[in-house]
Image 1 (cartoon, rainbow, N blue to C red):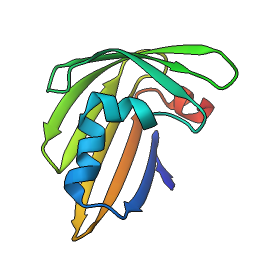
Image 2: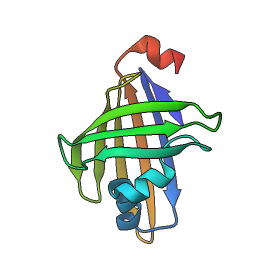
Image 3: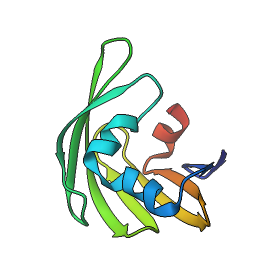
Length: 122
């Protein structure tokens, strides 16, 4: 993990082909199973995965607290990139890219915050 101006950059390699990793990001039932910090669960209210599509969901924390979220999908490039603007709470853009490594996939996750103060706080 590294950080730039208002941005956190993470990468991870998965022992799965790019098509499967991409599918985990673009299939609502799969996305709901893993999205968010460890220990959190999700209830999806709307998940329209297309440019301009709305994504509304509630993250349920391990402490019992609920965290409503609203985002919009900005760009979808099949098997290559998913770009999401998070609009509720701290505003940020997620840019996820999927690099084909044969039977493996490298995912680079860039989270760029709109506001420097919120970036520092988060």
